[in-house]
Length: 318
Image (tube, rainbow, N blue to C red; front, side, top):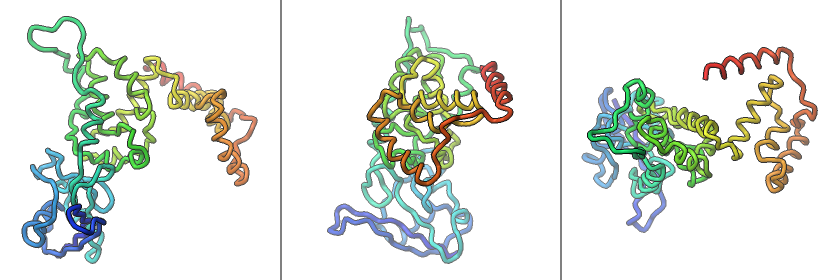
């Protein structure tokens, strides 16, 4: 079948350092992957095309890139699955949120720096055992999913927070942090959770679920981040905007059956945080002008007692 590729090109060594798209057309088998097509382009049509690849088996993670606007492994993406129609090309771009080196190759140094920042190694206390640190199998089962991460960077590529704030640790690093916080052989939970509770940590995730959607191994980084939030609050790290927001949200729904949107930001930032309170004034004015100002008197909805029973039941199972 005839396939068109629209590939974003960039070469810092030329006089024209502005990235641009270049289209290629070739015959491919229906069983071919996007990586098969890219390699054929490089070997048979344009030897200047630069990309990373290695295993071709969705193991090494080298070929993560954006395909039709969404991150994925080129070796694990069949052409027939991303062809919109016979005339539309398959758009291939480098992974996002990482510095571009050339064509489809990005610099992973910021990625590894953030992974290193969460100290991804065991920090046990007490006497060192004669052989190795042993943990019961049942205590490690919940880590099986997160240990499947191949560090491909697909989640980082499509993280909406990293697009606007590169100080965010990112889904890959936070999923790796969960792997050690949840390891029964590690004794640095309090230290780890304290650091993860700081700016750029677990509370900066907006729960857009992009990392869950694009992860080729089902690691579900966002789910791990949510668990880390719970663990941080259970450990007493509650004096942050994020923790206060979560508690205020929960308390409001539990008390009245629905969200008190007027008081939520006040309780999240703290009423004595004058800078934050002043920053909310323009939002309040726009809400008032558009008829979206929440009611001043927040009343319980009918059946709110049933919602409280749900909260009680969930908490009793913790």
